[in-house]
Image 1: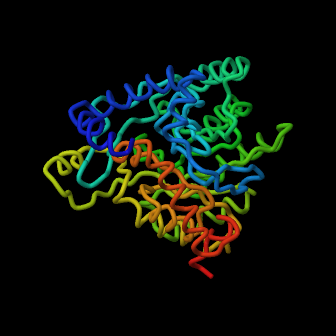
Image 2 (image 1 turned 45 degrees about the vertical axis):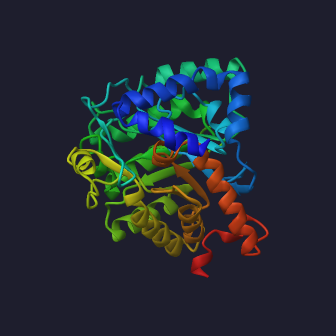
Length: 367
């Protein structure tokens, strides 16, 4: 099926606007992929082997999950395990409904295997998402694999009131995710990255942790950091997370930096505003994972995301210190078979290095 994707589906998608292509994919997954027949068919084509790892007190079939931004509205939660993912992150979700930034706002750089997006947290808002997820659960359509929610700041809310905004969304979604990722590093909402400044960060963490600690079940809270932050700022963030007893960190979000374009089409894509993801982000993502792992002696779980597209890049992130992984762009450029291909590769590397489990490989390059 990987060959079929490269020969037929991928070339045809190049002639469709990126956001329309994404919408078409989601339409299929939220209908056929949500049916029991569809799940069996998709799993037969793309199912992944098991490579178990326990993180946040939960057992994951293997480390690889779907990154935020693909299933923004949590419409295809049962499809992703069938496609081979061991966990899914939906969102970003904001307290208030919002349309996002003006279109066009998603661009492909095919030669560079990179995407540029300036979506701007387009979503129907936390209240509507909560109601849809409540119905999903009551109808027995909740996936058996872990689910994470990505939470962003509403565009119409200033940073002065950001803590209340994040806290409200967390409260709304609390029963509808296994863990939560506070997105303070998206480049696509004005001044959102200013929330990484320590005073702003402390306010958000203080409110969200208090809410979490007053709940009957204490669910993991994580923060997603920017690859464009200086190393010392990332370390400051890490130390604040430890002080507030947060459960992990996601490294990294998209970047506003641009690599050397490898084609005219890539140059055109890179001329647009927005965050870049995919292959060019990988090296910086690994640098950040290394930095965090060394600072924390491996005691703060890291989710590695950014240019995960092969067994080599995935193994690089694991041995650098990531316990879990995510991908997005690789689905666009390599097709759905990339998920099982990566997991099979990780399983092979684990065996070749005489590790009893993938857990032993986490941070191995630092030993």
